[in-house]
Length: 457
View 1: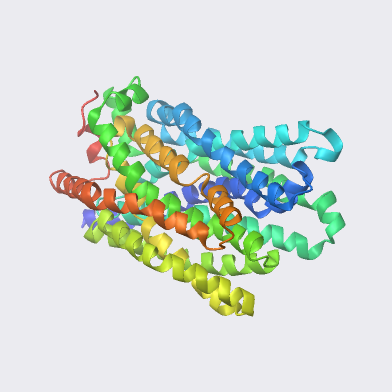
View 2 (view 1 turned 120 degrees about the horizontal axis):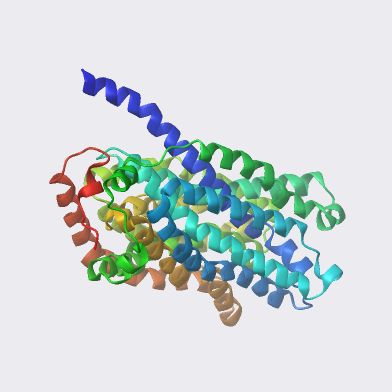
């Protein structure tokens, strides 16, 4: 009877944990992706060029620069999460992201400050990258260490949807402003609003996070004196950790990065820059696709709890590879013919397959590392994989389109990038997943059971 009662009381607590963690992470991704929604405007105001192609490439490159900074954020903040606590760290990173985003909204344009304007923009984009590089790992580990055994995939999968939901929020706000304002007003001051409104929202999210409790795993390690003094050194000096990092980087994380930044981020550039679709229509097609895919993240996460995380991701990668080229070709054909319902359906198909790849990933990576250095290992795996496969994918894809004259050259690059991810996930990811699942069956099912499972190296 007490067990049943405990489960009943734990459920709403877990829902609150997921909701508050997801809200903060979604806002961080909103701050990060507002740049994507405003790329054409910011390029015009901060990176002026008489050549439209050069201007577009410069704008996309500035998006990629933030990804180079994300591993630096991991190196700074992920060990902090393992030393001082998951909660404290993602409160700090949320505040830094908010300050950088508001800063962009206050920047003078190129016409006002010359070269200082793009320098300021790039600098603040780097700060955003550093903040996001430290945020996500702490949030995932926080949720994962609260979640009960057998539900960790479903619990952490919700956080994966926050990237696309953050972009959706950015697209919605930017589209509303463009609808309400004329072009002159939007270019004069309207573009600043999506950045500036981040201030009160981040303040509320920070206040909410300050009221959250630390994870039972971290609290138990701290009480037992089992916290690592150098999580980064522990991770980098461990052959087991390096194997887990490499399997994640070149396998599941690579697959996630390619599918996400092709299906969501590059898709927007493809519609607007390659097919010349009017921005509000492109935003609507992508927004509907995100809404369709978002509820499926916990479904795929729960499926990974049942049949294995690597298996779900592997199926998703195979299906995405098979669907991507025909989908992009169909999007091009129907966009030219005005078949917007079909365009939206095809964009949604890729978004759903992306959700299948992404949903199991956080629990898969986090379970590979001991709790004393879990956030550090997770952060390195994710951010190195993002830099290698995701950050500059939109730039490379647009470059290939411009060089070859083939509008589908970009998606060809994405498919080629996924092939090594498919191989690594099949040959090593499945085996690693089996070992983790076997280990989990051999230990108690309490959420805090792994606090003493791994010795400090």
